[in-house]
Amino acid sequence: MPKLRQETYGSGDMSWLDSSHGIRNARTEILDISAFTKSTHYPEGFIRSGTPVALVGGLLVPYDTTAGTTAGAGVLEGHILTDQVVVDDKDFGVPLLDHGRVKVAKIAAFYSNFAKPAAAKLASLIKYV
Image (cartoon, rainbow, N blue to C red; front, side, top):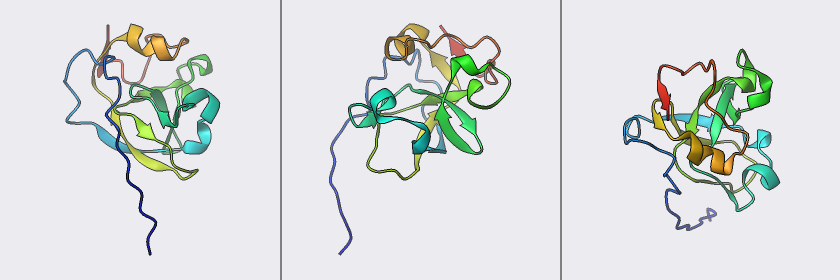
């Protein structure tokens, strides 16, 4: 018998979006759950909508503003579009907003060290307001 589970949850607080542009075109990427810590990144059991992420080795990891902007976790790839429930320690697919308009103040409300990237890879695709 397969292990079935029923969940009910919403898309999360999407007030960090400044427009609907890019929502329908969010691409799917794989989240490296081992790079996220429960106490820091998902204390309520889910990764928040708007979480800034970087693409390292083909997997999404937390964006690190202190890592610089030239390689690895210091290169912003985009933002996780909707809340993502963490069930176990297996990597899973998430929708990634990689173009559109984002309100910096709303992202910074959850991630205090987040600021508009100075030289982000996606500088021409994401407009930070």
